Length: 195
Length: 201
Image (cartoon, rainbow over all chains, first blue to last red; front, side, top):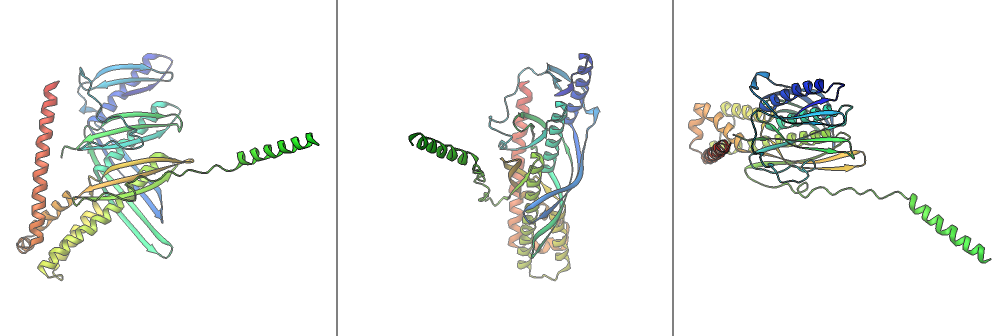
């Protein structure tokens, strides 16, 4: 998908959406994710202390792309694109179900859900949710963990450092859901396990 | 008198309705999913469950997953220690520096560095007021760890010569062989599937 806000001129919106579509297709083909995060534990409570996980793609991995559909909403232009011509749409990889509440199950597949709150521009919500989903997926593929736990009279205290460095190839977005009640967008991402 | 009685009853009913409408609503806390108190058991996998809360759904989910990963890492350490102990008991030389070296190397590699393929098997989200509560069940296949251990042992020739005769080592090697066979079969299946899909386009 490629997104863009609605500008005064539709041509400007489409131009930006195409640019975004190309970038998102690159992320699907090849994404290098690396970074580090720190969490602390105080008895049953876990708190996120900080960190940074970045994703990088390579624009040269995309040789060709096709725009399959275009949609104009009130404040967004959305493009649906693919790396090849699509004649038959594949069936969904999972059978319905509320995947945002309970992950789908499929053998030799890893799934992850990314969610983001509503931002001023809806496209930013989707892009953020997609990025979070990819990072969550990367952490499932490989995570380096360093953890220290101390058991004392006041309970358990500890610190954990998680880092990852993974290259994802073919991580596809398989589902999207907008929770209007809680103002959250959810994205389901999946990658087949080749080895 | 009759009018006063009616007014009195009316006031009583009104007060009752007002009182009950102002009473705090009972907060319904959703029950944790079935797998949370009873995680599955499988000799080829390690499982961990965790729960976390946050106002941000993604953060709640990441915190729970992180907790699971820490649990899996410590379970893995215990598992590796168990395997090493098995070798140790059979060979019977704890003070052996080569053996201790292997132990440190393996446990450090596995626990301090890597969790490969620790994936979310089940995830459940509930809303608790303003907070999201996420329950996560994570699994870690043990095959990779066993293969790594075998490779480490094989790298050290003197140890390998001694270990290869032991029952524990034969068991480990058998398991790894089976795992490789299974993986090869799955790869073949996947290739066939890809071939079929590619042919269909």
